[in-house]
Length: 499
Ligand code: NAD
View 1 (cartoon, rainbow, N blue to C red):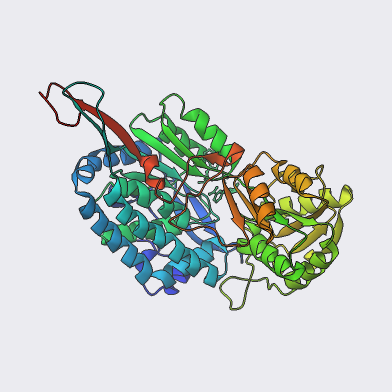
View 2 (view 1 turned 135 degrees about the horizontal axis):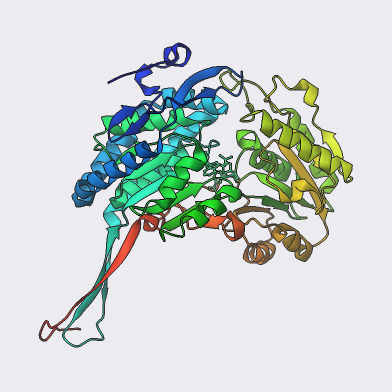
């Protein structure tokens, strides 16, 4: 097997074989036939950490051929046999946590402790779905047809194409792939070009875990080109995408001709609602935690912080104080809270969003960009007096820019919170149970977290409404995205008792 290693990254790993600069198709490390390749950059330093090949159209189709061939055997395995392979993969993810975290920090920029956390989080989906695959029960249906037995069985949908973003380079893959593979489906993963090495390390560990060739494939290439081929392929039966609403719409359109199962986890624009009864310090500290994870590059980031007018000023003070304590720097260094943004365009977008808000009357409480430790860094920024006409209200900033708005009553804050095309997650901070119930029910969001920043994990259905997506990942329904329900009617059985 051919191997090409970047000296810098590979020397940082206990196991240099986890750093691969090839695509992975049909159990083989593959270079691009056309000789096209792309550099992968460490966003903290701007240095090249490695290169990936761009596959040609025929090579993407070869991945579909491989998945098609492998499907025959994989779907025929018993659920507990697939479970064992997936649990072996889980064990390897845990055993290689440190190396996986180092790879992630280098390509994505998030601080090492956050990267370790993502490896844990990503691995937890593998364990959950390994077990969940054993519970894809069908039903027995009381028959309305004489002498017949009726029921359903669940069958794997077929090849699943998984297209994933750069902000969670490992967990966004395992949350889909583990569900699909546990259901009996082969997967073709197209990771973001910014963060391919986490996906390729997953492939290396899948191979070691005994996942057969053709079941877990990683294709690399020009995003629009690769996606077009996968969407147009009739043999690809499910498409699961996590990323921006713009690209999600495009993929939904491109999948129409082949009538695929499409799951979309798209953008968010989370409101963070603080009731008048809250301790402003407790709520402000929670809001900082909900806003600045992954340097704000998180679909669950608290994008619109809505604070009752009676505690607004105190809340702002505590928020600013807590925010000032956040450290910004290279995620490989210790004691860093915020790493860089993914690239320079993200910094420019953040600056434009701040400028737009200031031009329309917002107040800059903190956020001195001259202190940024590098060109891809953006210092935590706090704006108050944010209003509906500003970009920050409607667009995901995907940056450490917090915007606070005061509100007067529950009805007003519900209207404000729902004033967005997105509907992924929302936060409510109040201890008033009647207020919680009223607001929670009225929010047009797929997930509502009350008095808790942490809300995700394997047992819960993750997903949004409105333009935030279709379908749910995780939880007991997450595996349904990869299963078909087959109804059977066994007729002419003679007298069937209880039919
Ligand atoms: P993106 O849409 O730009 O990219 C996502 C994936 O699509 C990548 O693999 C990319 O290479 C590919 N892609 C890009 N342009 C394409 C095109 N024209 N045709 C086909 N494929 C294309 O998103 P991103 O910038 O990588 O990620 C950030 C977005 O992801 C944010 O909107 C964020 O809210 C969202 N996100 C959502 C969730 C969720 O679970 N709902 C989780 C994480 C991120």
